[in-house]
Length: 287
Image (cartoon, rainbow, N blue to C red; front, top):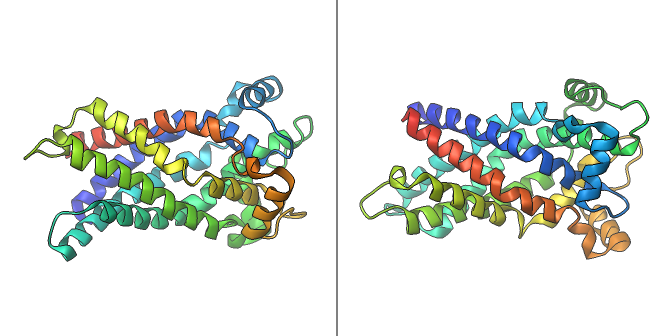
């Protein structure tokens, strides 16, 4: 990857930090809704959290994402850019929309090696407060959560939900990067220019819009993933992806696959707009 790879790593790290800090409050509400046995709206979930756990509860479980998301986003952009170069070299001509989708899917799958355990740890921390807010938490800190899972359940425990995460990452990042690259390359870059010639506000808006392509078509997959990763190790409710989907449909109907959808959509624009803008501006500074 050479020098460009190092620059993309730095840009991805900055984008990842911006993503976590701006998105964590929305994300914890989404997870609480998606994993709740009884229906709960976003406002009720937020007010209950503030009352029982304090404002800082919105950033509970942030340590693992801060450590992992920087790596994740650097992997995403690094693999994306290198995949684009390889595909373009192989084709001998400019990339088309499906090429961007394919490269995005490859980037997403590469990202799974970090995102699967990082999201598992985060979800475990986010849901434990709602299980018994008055009792002693199972995990005292993010570090304790990670240590405990590795100690008691090994690598397999840390990577619980890996395959559904791999599926989600492939389809979501294909849509995500495909939409962003299509809009920027076909509609924003001036003739004879480069991405550096595109105004920052346009990149911001395009990044936010691309976030909807990440979530909206594939949200049910993420909802099932959250349920599986939030599930108890000792007394699990679900026996895999299919079982979780069947039980969710039987007990909650189609609505069960969309719990937390609107907080997620509310989060999608600002978080992804911030991520892309932070990445693009960092790349401009260090290039």
